[in-house]
Amino acid sequence: MGLLSFVKDAGAKLFGKEEEKTASDKEKNDALINHINRFNLRTEGVNAILRGSTVILEGKVDTLQEKNRIVMAAGNIKGIDAVDDRVLVEEQIEKEPETQFYTVVSGDYLSKIAKKVYGNANKYNIIFEANRPMLEDPDKIYPGQVLVIPSLD
Image 1 (spheres, rainbow, N blue to C red):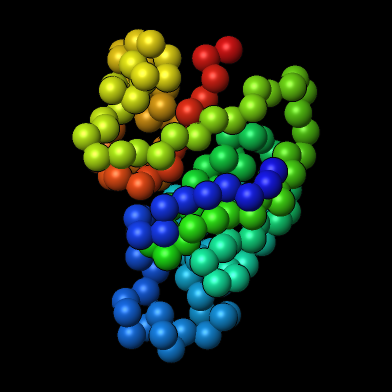
Image 2: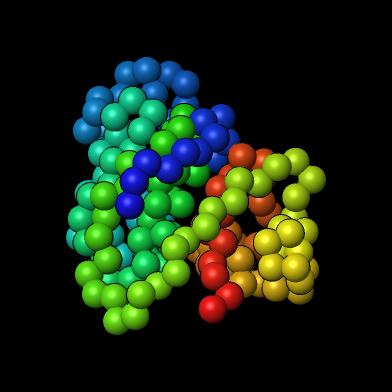
């Protein structure tokens, strides 16, 4: 929980330039929820509110993985520079390790990131799976995108 930073000029677009200027707060919030829902994430217990360039997420989810995916979907949107994560995990049977995040830079690819964070480039698939369904292909990442880096434990 807390405030997570994202690169404002990177990510998916919710609106064109003209639409963004004329969209009401309700239309922006609806577009935000629709964007998150397009990844087939369980968002029934989560509210997302857009305040300027910050997304406020509140509610409860079943797992830390669901929470991380919702946060990544909300933050990797062009024009968003922060996500205020107030989402609670309903039940944690075991204490899960704290989540790490990684911001992609030019020249990065998943195996290079895996080598950097795990010491083994062949573990790129762990990062890919943790960021599905936002990532549809391990070769399609972009500078400024924020990725979840799961613990190997």
